[in-house]
Image (tube, rainbow, N blue to C red; front, side, top):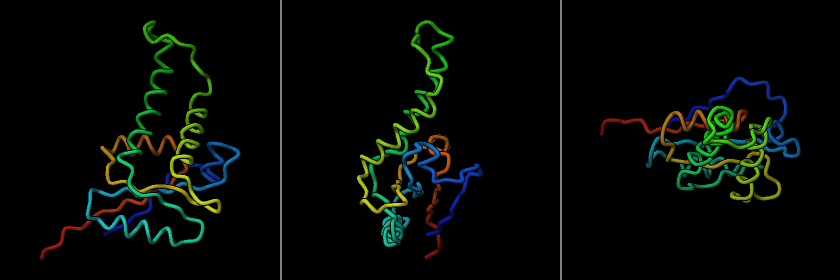
Length: 154
């Protein structure tokens, strides 16, 4: 298996979580695998042996769902100003609010040990590049390990 660490070039001096929610101090790391049989479970166990790291296992496409919620909220917040059928009171700081809310949901869902400083999950079910892109917009300082399996002749 091949792993690459991608880092989005953002001015994140503090932890990713504190960038989103000022009272949180964890870093976010997601293991995204290109399908099954890539060694993602071994990679998860390897990372979890590092001090303070807690990478949760598979979760039936949670990354896609978080990205979809973020996309829906951002889209409908903008549309409510344009179309009467979408009418609701727009929230001026909705991006910061939804980021923090979804991060707190993730913390409750994963339920990491108290001493966790790096948190994330592994997934083999990112539906598309757009889901991965949305997840990186939702958590702009998160790091992603892309895990693939090289096809090798027998």
